[in-house]
Length: 213
Image (cartoon, rainbow, N blue to C red; front, side, top):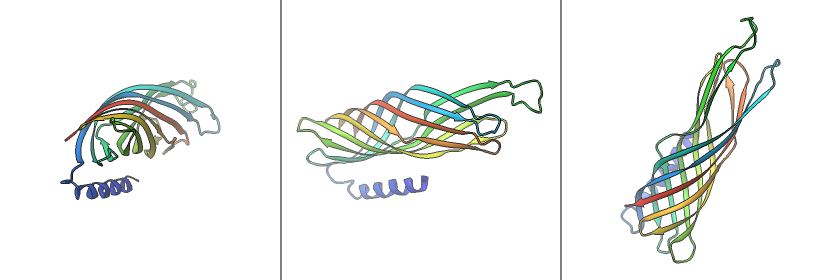
C-alpha cells in the first residue's frame, strides 16, 4: 500500500507543480498538539490459553507537518500534508510466570510499542461565509509499525486509513484549526511462534496552526 500512497502523492504533487506559479498555490509548515486515544486487545491463540488482555492509552503529542495547497478565489482549498515524524499510539510490558517447569511454562517479560508513520492527509477547506471560517474534511493514509520483545514471535506492520473533520479560520496565509481524526481498526497477527493477535482502535483531537509561503 505504501507504493500506492506514494504514487497518489506523487501524482498530486506533479499536478500541483504545474500550478506553482499561479496565484493561490503555496507551500507551508504547520505545528500541532493534541491527544491521541487508543484501545487495544491482545488475544491469545493457543489452545491452552484463549484469554484476552485489553489496555487503553491516552497519549499527548506534538509535532509539525509540511503541506502544499491550492487556494481558490473564494477560499476553497485542496491540499496535501505530510508528517515526517512518528506518533506513538501505545507501549507497554508484562511479565509472565507460569510455573517452575521450564519445559511447560512461558516465563519472561514481554514489551511492545506501536507508532504511526508516514502520515499523509489529503484535505479540503470549505468556506463558511466570507469571514475566513471554513469546514475541514480530510482523508488520512499511514502505516502502523510495531516493535516488540517476544520469545518466539513478532507482530508485523499494517497500512491504515482514516478521516478527519474540523473547523478552522484563515487570516491571509495563516490558519488555525481544531480537528478530530478517526482511524480504521488495526488488526495484526503474530508470526514465527504463536498465533496471538492484536486489535486496536485509535482517534485523536488536535489543534494546528499553519503558515503558508
